[in-house]
Image (tube, rainbow, N blue to C red; front, side, top):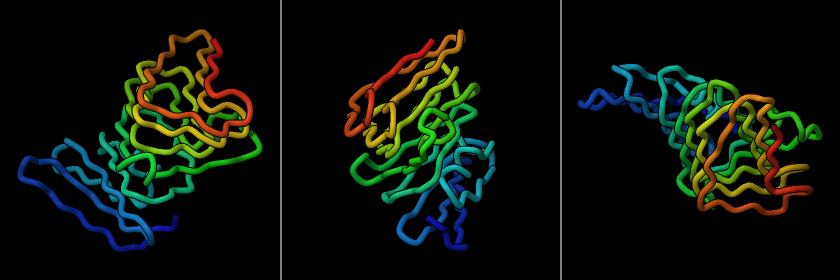
Length: 173
């Protein structure tokens, strides 16, 4: 999804900043409790990577972009039926080829209300929560959790696995 250039910035009296980026078919809002900080996010990935953003609220639409989570963030879609993040490549084992890949530093992240078309991976991160996530159509594993000797943990609730080629959930230590 290619965003348009129209950007709107609003600062609430509670010193919460909301930035909205308008895309052709969708609107994305990124919210943070940082003091008067603003993230001019043109993509979901840009909002997730912005140091000023702690909560990314994703509006209805399909987003064709892989997202790497390298720090704690709350990523919420309006609901899995209306928000899809897509990333399908031939290299399904590579965490970074997935719609969402939570890497070291992404500890404590929460992802909810989103369909992940192409699977999701958690690599060496702990306390990662997936709530109401639809994980589908991965070329290999739906949800892959890699520890490599590092404590790695996830919480999975109210989620659905569908159409994944090999295994829905795999844990590799």
